[in-house]
Amino acid sequence: MIVEPAPAKLNLALHVRARRDDGYHELETLFAFVRDGDTVRLTPAERDGFAIIGPFAGGLGGEGDNLVTRARDAFRSSFGPGEPLSIVLDKHLPVASGIGGGSADAAATLRGMAKLSGVPLDDPALFDIAAGLGSDVPACLAGRTMIGRGRGERLTPIDAPDLPVLLVNPGVGVSTAAVFAAWDRIDRGPLPQGDALAIALAGRNDLEPPARALAPEIDAVLALLAAAEGVTLARMSGSGATCFALFDRVEDRATAAATIGAAQLGWWCLETELA
Image (cartoon, rainbow, N blue to C red):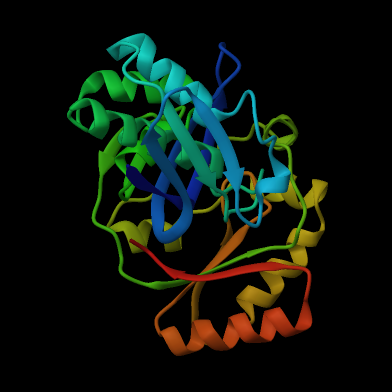
């Protein structure tokens, strides 16, 4: 049995430069990952099976089409059918929330199948499969801090800051397609230079304004995070609605989580660290 983590992805900065002729957008983004997220368990079995458990299982269908099963099938198309697998996705990340839950699950499936099949994790074919599954999947497959360009699939490693993080989602789903469609198509410039923290602090998320217009609940999340004591940066991740705050001290993160949790009982909060 292989138990593969599928940690949440953050866009510490996300600059949208242009809409491409293929319908995608030209991006420059700073990917980072935290220590917590979903888990994918792969077990050899007599026949294929797929199940979803965990607190956010209800947001996805228990059987049928899913990025996990798409990743399984794409891996087999490239590397051969292999043996039947029982796959269980333990879903702890909110669905459609801007932190790459589905992409991370697909990437974890690819890593797990590679380990079971003896395929090196740096095999270029794995990254080709990942790019075909979604723009964030290659970064999730690498699972480390990266600068992403193009659709997000052209990756350059960069050292990660080791900081406490608080993730907060107000319990609303935001359509990625709708957020990109509402982007004003103004190129506000490239990612800044420097180390990861400097890029994050001087950068921005160009999808934050359209997402906030579509889901005003994001305004309240960002206001509470920005007002927290000891916060270094508060920003929305991806196309929303999850927002994050970076802290210098674990104690300040814990205080912010307790304050927000008491004020907004229906919100999802995760205390974690950049990995």
